[in-house]
Length: 207
Image (cartoon, rainbow, N blue to C red; front, side, top):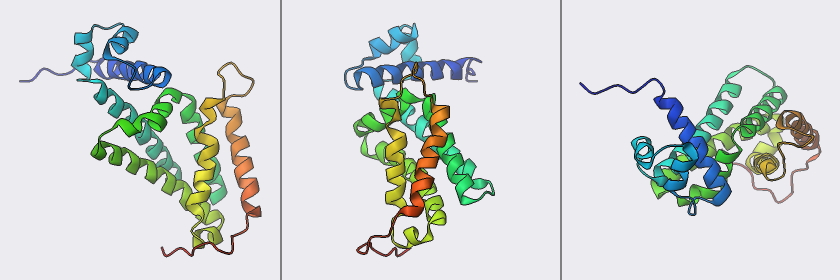
C-alpha cells in the first residue's frame, strides 16, 4: 500500500510555489536557481525535490495554477444571471482583486511563459484565451455592433492592457490599492465604451 500524503503537503507545495514565483518575478526564471528556491523556503534541496522535480516543474505549476484561477473566476461570474454591465463590473473587480494577491505569479505568467515547452505553453495560453473569450462575450453583449465588427476581442485586449500592467506601478504602500482601483477601471472602460465608433474599414465577424 502506498503511503498517503501528510496533512500539510498541499500547504507546503503552495508555500514553495509562492517563494519560487517571488524569485522568478524578481530575478527572472533563467537567473533563479533551485538552490535559491530552497533557501527562500527554508528547506533542504532534497526536501524541495520531493515536491518539485526541477525548476521547470515550478514554472509550469505557477503558470497553470494562476491562469486556472483566472479561468475559474470568469466562469463563476458568467454563470450568474446578471446584466452585462453588472457582469463586466464583477469580472473586472474579481480579476483585479485576484491580481492583488498574485502579483508575482502574474508577472511570471506574463514574462516567463515563453520558457515552457510547446505543449505546456499551448495549454496555458489556451486557458488565457478562455479568459479573454469570457470578457469578449460580455463586451459583445454591451455593444452588439462591436461583436458584428469583430471588435469585441480587441476591446477586451485594451481593457487587459489597463489591468495586466497595474502591478508595474501600483505600490503596496501607496494611497491606492487594488480594491479601490477596480471600480475606477470599470468606470473608465464602461464609460468610454458607448462613445466608440465602429471604424468603416472594420471586418465583419463571421461567427
